[in-house]
Length: 252
Image (cartoon, rainbow, N blue to C red; front, side):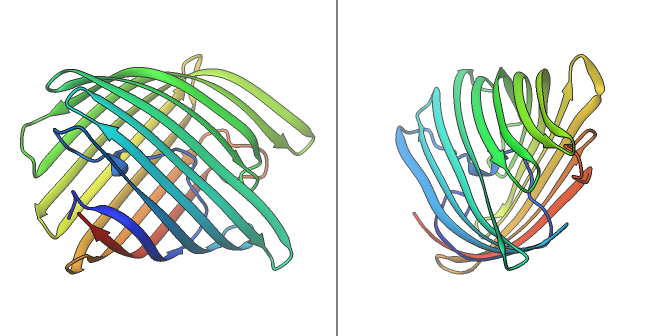
């Protein structure tokens, strides 16, 4: 099931806010041949944080991979209705390139742009690079470690005006993918992103997904995401989480 491509996400129910770090680990498709792959999904969410929110999300993932190169494009566009009257939007575009120069080591480059009215982020731009390491050789149990450095530009709406930050951050992550059978998969990734000039200013983001096949081509997926930001924009809680449950239709 973990090699199948998601075509349509039918139903998603979310309980509380949205993460701000894109977890590309759950989107990578493993292959040794040159091929295109991807998925398009639509999420329907009911969110409870500072407001009652109804959310519609469009997710698109496009990837090209061969033995040494990986090109990845991820977009996430949201339309949200707050308290039956207010309307806000948010979105993320993430581009990533990997070059594998050894069987267990690759070099990554990425850039990302983001806006999120709920989290008071008018614009956040990222650009980073660094090595990615693979541990073990089993196809059923995979572990990865990434140690990247990135430049961040963030313009946020504060209580008394606008705040602009330009920082250099680390972006380390630990990821594992477990495939105990062809019908079950568990994928988990945790990111740690400190500001290099002040390590007390950091973000931790973790996402874990469990997916299993109900019938051939039809499965269920449950994902829990947690975000902690030591210094979020004004009036935004330090800790935010999302729990989504969905029915997915897949094909080879």
